[in-house]
Length: 353
Ligand code: NAD
Image 1 (spheres, protein in one colour):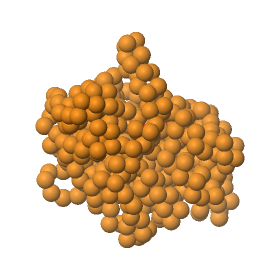
Image 2 (cartoon, protein in one colour; image 1 turned 60 degrees about the vertical axis):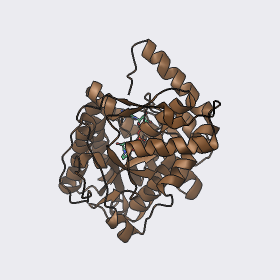
Image 3 (cartoon, helix red, strand yellow; image 1 turned 90 degrees about the vertical axis):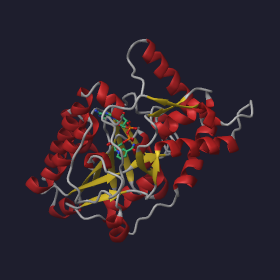
């Protein structure tokens, strides 16, 4: 099959592209604008494969998107291109509305124009798979989990823009019959994660001898999933999922932020002890909380487990150890990104998380 992946140079998109090239016979076109969050180096392991192609384009550019779709003639579109960092959405929401809402509309519009001209059998087999987040459901108290029936209640500019895009995708399914699927996943972590997100940020700061900045008292709970388990779920969904159906994806791995950071520190103490023999946990420092910080997210993934037979292969602890080992072995990937970010910040372009 021919699969168009938008945002394939990002954290999850690049994991999906690497997975598809290594574990399927599909051809993949990666359409990505290469914003600050996109790194083609994350695709180096598969870049020379003849089944992989890349086009640099912005999902808001209707002409470029229509041309990429018309040239590649995908049977599946998986849409991951997005602005994805909550703190950036608080400092500058406009880009989130532009890419996540207008960009998703532009892609849907082009996908629909292409899809309705397909022969009926190809039309029936086509899928537009939109990748979204559990943050659209809002914040939980101490109990309960998000199911596919949980009402939307987004509370940050990021989650509101993702919620809007989810609704647009559902509308194109209901109104125009486009075979759409929406998946909502919990927090991902793993290799090639941009070092502004919590887990990689803590790893690189720990290695740099810096303070590990934990929001508030670290009481916020997130439900973590190893990125390679997420992309296995995405693969199952677009091959075997039912159009018009939604699937929540999560790893049953709820952890308080402070516990995530302490576990990370313990792994680093074991794998890469500090030169002075002290514990990395001594670097933990508490900083002012994020405005409107959602307390708890937790995913009920019963549907995808039962209907598609998917289950995560990594526990949180095994995935975290793999992640730490990867960051220790791949400084050549993240050091230049940190250097570029520091240069941007000196020029007043970057934002600190
Ligand atoms: P990311 O920020 O690492 O990557 C986003 C990619 O999209 C980058 O390669 C970037 O260059 C590209 N992009 C941004 N704007 C674009 C535009 N206008 N046109 C074309 N390309 C553009 O994000 P991620 O963490 O890989 O997340 C991918 C998707 O998964 C997002 O839709 C996000 O909402 C969703 N998601 C993420 C998580 C998570 O924990 N990271 C969890 C659930 C869902």
